[in-house]
Length: 377
Image (cartoon, rainbow, N blue to C red; front, side, top):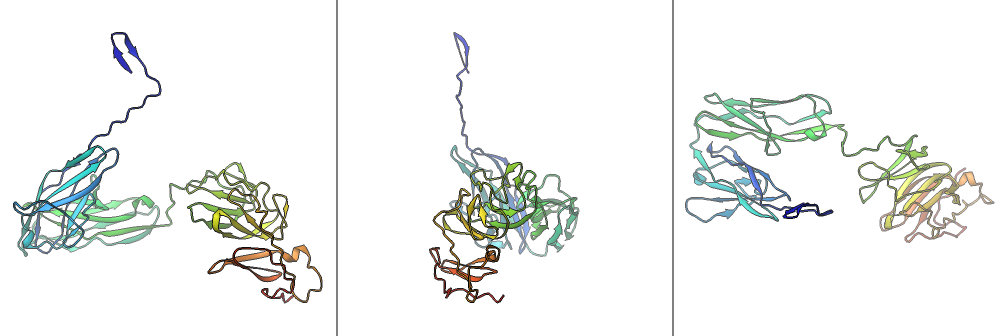
């Protein structure tokens, strides 16, 4: 909208994006640590677009130097800079974080490290322990301290402070996949001396990934699944609809679980799919107990394009097992498994024996079947 002497006018379709330098919403604070123990400095940043972080350090009046992930430092480009096994030679160290995005750079306040002599008394007697639990279970992390209290606590997850987690234990009442990560605690005494615990890692087994939502999924059984190189999934089964979308026996899902509308197999196979194999160029080999795929005649094996159609350049003219005496019935040609071969090609196995398709896949017309394993029927 624009205001002037003529009044108020609207400019349709105009979008204005304001890019500003990052803003520190949490500043690092001075730390006192006993020699030989760990401590850390933490910041929080608000920025759009997102900002990158880099910690800097100096001693005395020396120039500022970018911190690298080498002893005693870790987390040089994360919100939490950790100093491991602090020693007297870094007493008085100053640290500062710089956040940068397209709008510019901002520097945090300067925080100073005070390394106290060993034996001052602030020590962790019991570290928090890593745990593996099932989704929905309750989890508790705790720390046991030596030294003169009272102590203050700040629990962190993956280096970021957890709001309100300021007790000597951390209780997570019902964990999910989002709860997985590394948990640690910063402990301070009344003199300001601080120490940081080791990280305890939480692994949540059997947690449902909330980013994957098949929206009701197929209306029948899924008998085969294939994870694809591009992050999608190919599924086969007895269904004829997936999330309400018509898909007869075969469907491709996007990484979020929704149906990939760019893949449409039409009427699909007229029987059970026994195996799936991903090929180059976004194509697939579909193997099973069928002799039609979307109306095309196929001998229980079909190469499918990335769009879901039968590849007409693939003619699986399969050999007849030796000793059969005549062409075997269609039902005996059904195939149940396929494996990829190192260097290309694949093996196809079923009631007719085993046959090798060399790279590139081409029709095999040698009726003497030198590369097949005769059936023992």
